[in-house]
Length: 250
Image (cartoon, rainbow, N blue to C red; front, side, top):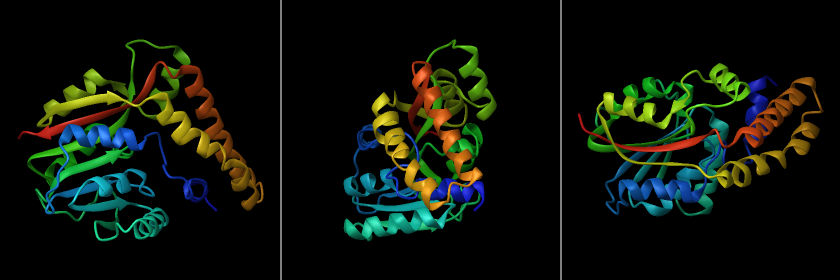
């Protein structure tokens, strides 16, 4: 297996592929306004195995297009949605987030939890904006500094891993300069990281290594995640995911 295939294998049985929670998803949805309109259309981009997608489907009457590059995650989402009787609300789409087959103004809302970094914050906003109808909403979570200064170690790590990491004030300026008006913002709690993401992930390490015969590459994948967890536990007061909810104004 390649490294990306191993990462998918590690995450495939997880409810979430990144920090978040049902509470976070519902908080963001409430800021948009719960829609009972059966014609409401939402695209969940970078949906993974659909932790947030299922929550959205359970609280909306409309239609959700769940987009991910990896069909393994979409297969998991389809299986879960059938078990919950939500398959009529969710349509999965295997596509890249930077090459979407959507029409201009097709959606009332575009959702993305923890995945816009793949394109970059501003580039993603600029591209996805086209598919949101006038007055529609964008809701996304993005790695964000929660202080204006921080220790060199964590600053260097995140600047290297994701140069677009920034404070919420600067992220909001980017939204506003690209035709959006902020509706609401909040940061994810420690539980969204530790209880909902890191602890379930750690519980998979042993099984993952065993089924992949403890190869050097599998061990590297686990060590990389262990290092990430250690950094978060050491420096969690300096960064989190910020959840940005904005309305398209132009």
